Length: 631
Image (cartoon, rainbow, N blue to C red):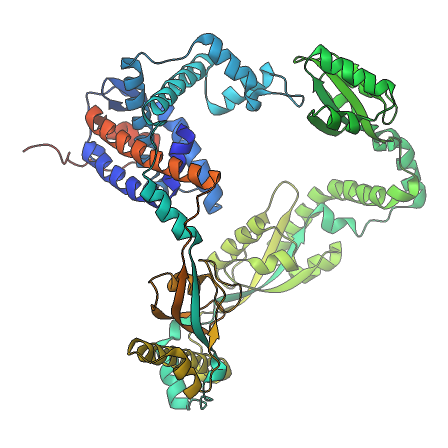
């Protein structure tokens, strides 16, 4: 339940609550320094400490979540700006407050129960669903737990779970809330409407140069060139050298014979099994096998669940008995073998033969491998020679011609994206080269740029085109189209607003449409997602802003305006389905639980050791006075 309760934090109301929690956290002394707490303690909640290790573990987990969302790892300063430290502290403080309450109430869980939960946790099982000690220990190491600290954490989590269930599991939302949610999602509206598009407008006269010049001045920041640096670049790598190396057919054949054993692929088998949990099921399964029924038929008739292991080699199957028996069976043959939860019916659904591929299939692969291997042997020697040539101010093109490389002229912007296409660099390598290019000066010899153990780039800076404002002569047509587009959008909005004003003054939509040569339409009953055409979600949401007779004008995703009046509302007085009722109940309980933990945190009173906190997040902030201190 706590996982569901915490997922509430991602909702609208959760974010509102989060804002209050962060403010309240600041009130606890987030800007103050408490010296009475130990140096290994980030904060104290009541009589319980939040250790540096616990905070850092939770903080790094939250950093990982944010990194996945942003696509980059935030710095300590960015993490602080995003509120990550305070969010983590607040969550840990809530846990400790609940732990204290659980302890006071005598709630907990037995060692036997913990062991049972551990054995059934899918995070600690092997491919066959059995508990695997090595997987368990590896997961603990990766998460920074000892076995004792992990079990203590699980024990406390169970206590918090019991608190949540004991207090909130029986709360039901009021029927009015259910009715509001039902009507919000299922009421339908029928609209009278007209669609205004650019075809409803008269043509816009082309702008004069004076108008364009004024428009350019107002929007000059949109019309600037990007600084461009033109370089001549050359890349050295085994792959770049490989194309110049000749490999004979006899060498390819000799290498094939030498590596033939390594090229051989082991046999694979597609394996499935079903667990037979009692003797009766085993007997029924064996009877079906004797009658010649196949695996899938028996699984379906006995309402069993088949587990598909996929295509595996014998070495990839950790259970010795299963691996041995699976590779003894013929295709489609069934065998019953023992298992942890009962006997298992095992079947092989496909056999992928192993063996070495013919020479014709791998000749090109072998050729390229030999070329690359020989190029690697040449790489260091050629690197030294090119460095000597650069020191002697030899032109890049001469060096390139001597070693069969390419010297390419590249107009480069600060992102370096042009290098990914022209030199085949990846994004990180291209950015690194671009950084060096944009830090260099014309006429100076720039050192080589190593991009790993066997890739180097050299360049000469040819010219710099500074970023500048574009002129009217350069972008006249582009500017003209942009200005005309803005004028038409403005006129369309004004036209829609004029029709809306007439509607609000009492004139019917049909009358307005006929006078202006438009075709009035009546919609199908629509919900908040619209009709999939002119009345899209934007328009539908606007139409749900009032009752019968409500009028509005809304721009849809296509850029057209829909002027509408609500003709009728079809109420949905039916009952919510089970999933919707559960969603409302969960949200209601989550809100109550959030209020409860807020009050619990306030009663527990948290003290924060800011010096340890700033060290824990890798940020050295100046110490500020405690805002709660009375002078």
